Image (cartoon, rainbow, N blue to C red; front, side, top):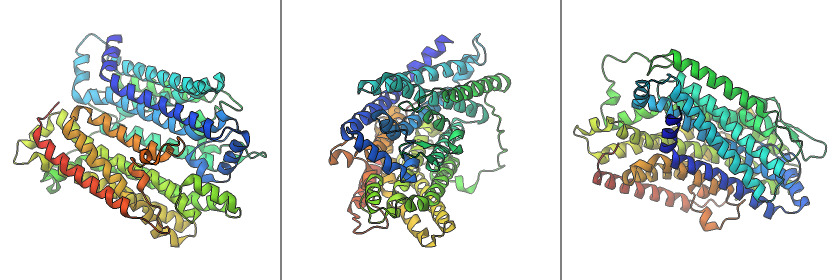
Length: 535
């Protein structure tokens, strides 16, 4: 098993290095920025007071637990660190379990005198080591900026334990699903549900009498991310909630190991549907094929968009009512949530819809990277053996990616609109749809840029595709916290999305984003014809 572990670690050495160092840099950068910007206790107390006054901020950021530097930093950043650890674990486990099974590597390993579960156990051990590394860099980063050592260790353990819980979820998903794409969808959906449950529980939590602490409502206790929050490392600290993460990890890994020993190679708990006697007319063309490969993933992304829309519409009214009688508080909250809008409700909706734009961009990147999978697994060669130009295939993939973006945004916008109608704000229906669709230009940039990477350096396209999305999100979401120069923050397409509706909307940045997307698509289509297929 140790040789399998070494082989898997060697294949993932650069990806894991990027994940671990990226999470570490985000933790250190956020901690340093908060320490510098909110050095005085009164400033930190004011920030927490503002957050407690707005359920929207509690939903997006996390769980306040006092006004110490460590508590404010944890409130600002822990949720995002936990999500990144969860995604790292999900992709790692699925890639080396169901992914290797699809590519035939598991069959080769099984031909040697090793147990059937050896590869899965090596993958779980690699995921454990990766999350231990995350715990070390996060805890060490917090301690390096001068925070108490005990609390820093707890933050690191909470981040790593969250990642371990999702290692177990991904291991079980890889046994349930018949493809790595479906397994990633199941495990990624679990990450989204965990985030939304945590957000709902924090937004509906009970505020203490000193207005510096919040006790989560019951939905948070259904989420592995919520369990990590309950550690409260720089306040009423306790490591007991992490036992829930570890118990979930152990139980799901045990179930996954039992399933891999009992099922046939290549099968899954979800059986294969019988195929049609003849190909669907929709498959008669490279676009039909690209869309057929993407449509099940779009369903998963759309479910997440629908939940996010319901969340936006359902919490908007309570968020506004919490501060509408306090003009100073409303102005401060508006400055934290977003800028450029005269209406607090517009600011809140824009903040939530920014996450919808990230989901749409993720769906587009997945569509483009699916083309890389088809190439590396040898199926693209069969398609190109016909009278199909290579650049036509890539352009059809980009068309499928663009359609994915539109569907995700429309589903999220309609979901938010119906939630507003149910809350007694029918006038917000079309505004919600517009606030979703205005994310289109920013999300649209990522697909052709990822395709450009695929055309130039295909072997790094998977890593760089998701890294570019992460960088765009971090620059837009945390650029102000890190006090980055405007030109650095402007690198992110998400930084140029206007608030709709709003006064004096400047559409020039969105027009530029569309032009950039078109140029990147044209360059990718031209360059992909100049290279050989790679595996």
